[in-house]
Length: 214
Length: 214
Image 1 (cartoon, helix red, strand yellow):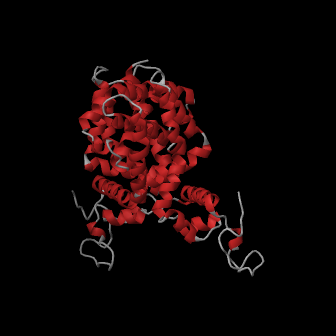
Image 2 (cartoon, chains in turn blue, brown; image 1 turned 30 degrees about the vertical axis):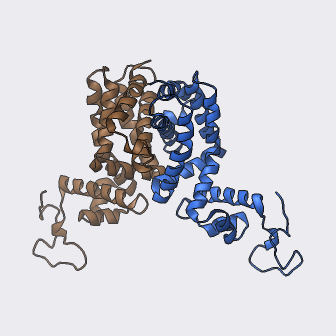
Image 3 (cartoon, chains in turn red, blue; image 1 turned 90 degrees about the horizontal axis):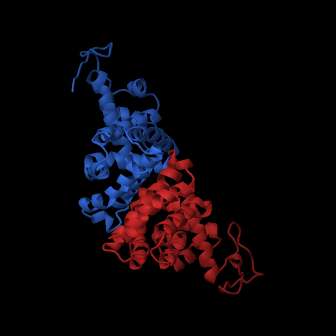
């Protein structure tokens, strides 16, 4: 993390008077580092507070920056949410790499990949927060809809050689999403306690058929 | 709908003084009819207000009965919620009948049945409300978990002749749940606008494999 007190033109400088009750501007990160900190703070805020209780002001405070900087980098709360979703789904963008290894065993590789993402608490928490927000707030659903449609599904579909590739990719995604909801959120047995390998073994042929058999 | 003013022992009787700002007790339904009205009011309240904004008092008011009658029939708010879920899932209890026709074409019959329930706005709305509540409130998740586990999945599993039948039934349910979330809640294309027959055609072999092939 860089900390360059001269980088944002604070006229008081590092030795100027401090204002009470507010972090010194000289402590605020700027540039790519500030952007990352804002995004990570946003992800945590959305995850912990939910969509409608999260504010740009709260995100700024958690990131140790001014609200204006959040608006500068991202715009509205919805736009911060969209960027935080992209950060959460970043692992999903390696899916084309998974697809790139050819169609042999593709279903199993994808099932293993998805289950791995959900089994890891660090990637699971923000994904759950995103899903919960999208299932309960239309603004969040709109953001996810645009993202899911435009980026993830289309990138997967491009790598497939079947008719209705985007539809098939979405069916595969729906299955993994439903498993995640029952296993990690509702925690309905026996799925909640099932060995991940057993889930992968059962689900792999389904994904394989959706993504490769026309 | 029956309306028997003598059925609940109101000492004021039908000609007694009316209290201001509160429905006359003589208008309150009783017996099986009151129970049904309370359940339907509960389902509507949970659907429209969400889990944590719904109260026993609000349900009683919507049903035109005293809160004490709601407590008498169902107990706590969680217990009213559980009963309302059962009412919503009542169609799901015909699934053993679907299963009873044998394993030939079972996947297609089940897919058609599920899609039919979700395509019908009258059954979709309460189901969505239940799912949203369960995904955002642990108390609601607990109720659904108990119900999904104890009733629906086990009843389906009893009719199957495969190892891990409950696990397989839950995998099938997870897929239908995920499709419902993406199609009806997040409304992500192309699934949101897809012809129901196209979804059934793609999903039927998946359900068939989960439920019949060991």
